[in-house]
Length: 570
Image (cartoon, rainbow, N blue to C red; front, side, top):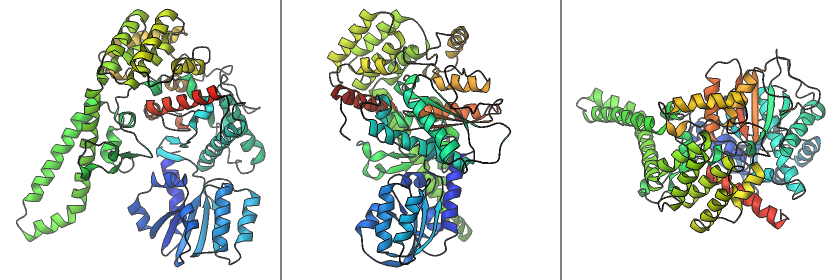
């Protein structure tokens, strides 16, 4: 049930059975699906000498009959039309067509009719219609991620496309895993309900034969939930390696673009890969906190210096031969050391410049501990602090508003006014729009652990323990409680109803939680840690995007803009 392996297996099968020189042709979405699990050098080993986009293939007429074309694209009507044109005027010797999801019968007929010169050798469906960034975490990288916040009447066709894409992605995950799940959804979310119902319709009616896999002891569970049930997690600063890189610099398809950091020397302004599959140091440190990473990087630098010192001591022909043999590994190690040192150095500078330790302590207090009066004073002080950035001021006021929206409306309004005067770049009413979207009236779960006696007791115990551990990572996403409820068989039917008459018999062994509106790396860490406890249940987390606070706020601003205008130009 490891998604990265599943996607790699698909690509292996695509490429290894086709001998000779190949061109791999992708679209704007499958390029992410492939690049995140397969490196350029691995493609070369499979005799792929050219990687092209389907759009650029359409624009060129140069004949390359010595190459075999391997297409891996989404089965969209646009892609089928491009293929229709390309098959009518074939540039390559052979065409091998692989689609990342279900093809319609009409699309197969169009392709067959277009292949007048009989260059198509095969047409197959390989269900990799998602981006598998980590073993238990996938995303759909949806550009219009804000649509889940809008009522259906605002943009019915946009929301339908959004739902269709999510259903396609979820279907591909279960086809890749060869499972058909029991489906539940968050009762308070219309979007989650719609997606759950349309997924059930596809799996149990329209394509029931395709999803009729061998029965397992207990059916897997698909739980569709809404980002707005936990708006706190994407607003927090992060202090573990992977999450922190995404929050402070940005991580897209496991790549970090260092060109965005102007202060770096020219030779370091490159795109670097941060993948647990390709980088042993990152794999063992991606969930570690910032303080430990610094010490671990120092150890890695010391190890590298030892290797470098031994390479300087070349006195015999044998030494020279050994150096030449080990050189590729040495260069790889040098690149890895340079990459991690650069990332941690840049993040340290940002932490200092934006006073993030000070900001984060207040954020964690707002998310995890009570005390409205002290919280108001702390937030007010930070709003007045010249070193605190506009985005950090906004996030602090949002966290305060989510926590204390019902407690002291006068003080809340004072914070709104202070934010407007200190950081006028943000649109009026953005915090109020967040409360309208994700305030206490809209949420299902016990976000702040203050509704349920068990959660109140647990929070008190955690508060006593936390100073011994780390004040900056005391927050646990709401997802942790959800997984705990599933593990104990206590996920309430009234809050998370089943779709149709397919109910859970006993405890599930496999659970896919899909979050409409996007996931965070703090949550994917939570899932990885839960899976490492061997509870007997394996969790996979998926979502429409991978958020940091910047992306979450951008989606919120776009939804607010469209809601105000009342109409949406598609």
